[in-house]
Length: 168
Image 1 (cartoon, rainbow, N blue to C red):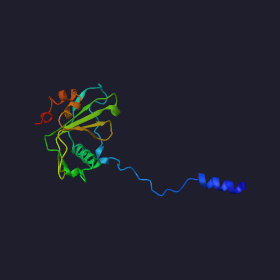
Image 2 (image 1 turned 30 degrees about the vertical axis):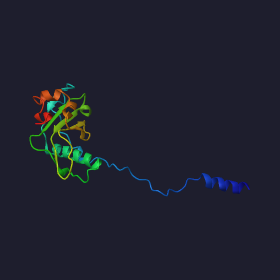
Image 3 (image 1 turned 120 degrees about the vertical axis):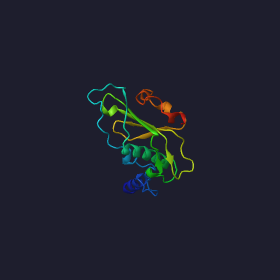
Image 4 (image 1 turned 90 degrees about the vertical axis):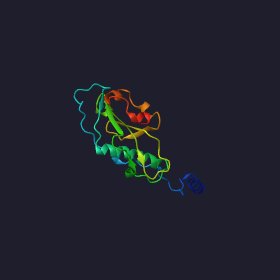
């Protein structure tokens, strides 16, 4: 009797096989193109945390901004938007950095206008992106008022608030 009782208890308490498979999360890791290698900062060795610098926009940076917006659009159900579908017109992108206490705390910021092909209701302009240290570029905010999220000290490095921040 004890053996039968043991078998019954074992069967009742044993883990059951899953009839429904576990599903991986719907969101995939951001594409690697969101993290282009950074050039060594010109301020390394003479850091003044909080100091702003205008940065030169490299092609891999421009591609990272487009990829970030395409990734966000796909994650929010806008279909199969690719990096190539997102165009940031020449002269419509400002890029700067704030020195951190070391390179892992340096903040990189960008604001730009974007045109998105194949999306019925494209997100409003302008777009603000941020990157901390060597991490990925992430779009923070878009639309009217987006530039209010930028650190004001960047406007000094850029010699004023970009015209695209006021809808120009």
